[in-house]
Image 1 (cartoon, one colour):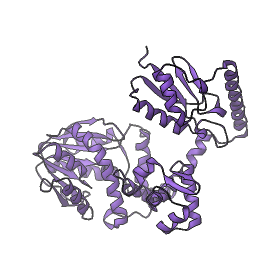
Image 2 (image 1 turned 120 degrees about the horizontal axis):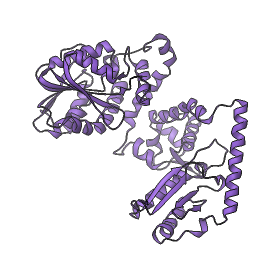
Image 3 (image 1 turned 135 degrees about the horizontal axis):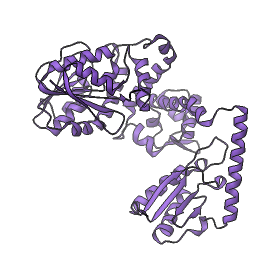
Image 4 (image 1 turned 120 degrees about the vertical axis):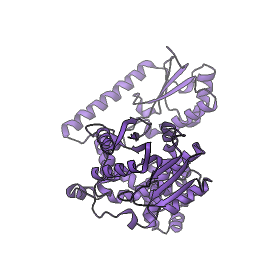
Length: 453
């Protein structure tokens, strides 16, 4: 079987600094150039590209192998890619100047590198040295913190198309020496480019982190920076069994609330079409969006069903943000807002659909049971409750993101966590829902749906 005319394996293995590897020799840029060229030449259905581990000729990377011919190329730089694609994939002729012709020499080089690697691994193991992947996990916070600080300071907007460290420091009111250190670290991480003392955003950071880009995600990502400070207290939280220094939403200022709602809006806007499709756009004409935040889900349901009326229930500081999104969507009058605390307030009456999205992880088991009971009271007979959240497997060790998010609730809430399918089903049935079922969605969260009996 040969679904593609050509299959390209290109090495992108990362090894410890100082150890020769394709990643250190710029394989990421070559891979990007190759994918773009294949797309531009309309060869996607003809050429399959697969990244892989070490091919063995580490000192001469980036390396790639093209099958079915089995041609090995070394030292392939981004500027070589157009010629390689034209010659090999369009004209059917291997690019001789980059191809390896001496099979015995190549085999010897691969074997030599393999022997060196195995000897180094044996020596590290005998010395009790931490494995590289474990050490990388332990130190992973360094790159994360550097990037979060850059977002907090709005570094990528200041750098833009080109600026020196001194110019950036002046724009963002930071110390020149410290700013240069941060910028250099960001270059090492691939977040900035540097040439002759001038720093520039990469295409990715310009798109997602700089003011003025339509895809700028910085405002929502400031919430991640706020979370980082809470995670630094994880040890104390594990000892205490709850968040240390917790503040309720109503007591937090705009510096916390606005980034939080921005982050939730970005997530919700991405997932809302999936939820609408799974639930059905004609799923009733009165929707209650409990803790609806930015109103992204209510807006999606209203756009999918022109007979639907939605009510977003949330705390007073959140409602002006939600109203702004509602007005911008042209749904004023069809989507309204109502102040309320989902932890204890009555939710209303005669709704045909109640949505509880990304809420239950903030609450204790007892609070979730009480919320589901009040959701049932808010529904008309036959109405549905739709709950979206992380849903753990029975032993609560997977999915990984859901298990880690339980710790996020430990450091950020009095008694929140992530819960399993069995727990949600038991709580919903105890509240009076029948035909309770799970609907799997792509991504980290799924739906639990129940019908009011």
